[in-house]
Length: 95
Image (cartoon, rainbow, N blue to C red; front, side):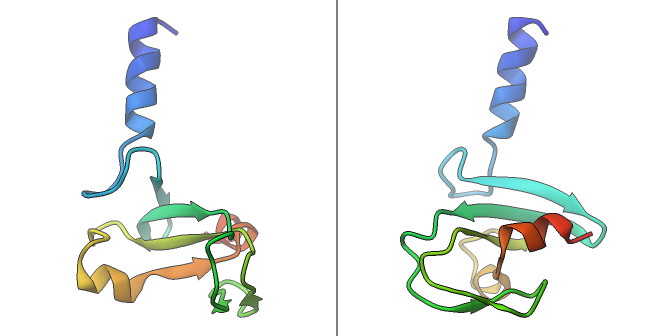
C-alpha cells in the first residue's frame, strides 16, 4: 500500500460523529443500520447497565461499548436517550 493510501486509510478510521475527539468513536454497519460505537475501559463506569444483547448486568468497572444510531449526533438529546451499553462480546455477535 502506498504512503498516500495508508495515510488516507488512517484518516478515515479517525472519523467520528460531530463534536467527538478523533479516534474515540467508530462507525459500524449492522443489519439494522449504522451505529456509532465507543469503547469504554470501565474505569470511569460507576453504574450498573443492562446489556440489550443478553439482558445481563454490566457491572461497574467492566470494559464494554456504548452504541447509538448513526443518524443521531451524540450531542443531541435524542441520541443520549438512544445510547445503549453492551458487553463487547454481545455487540460483536449482534447481527
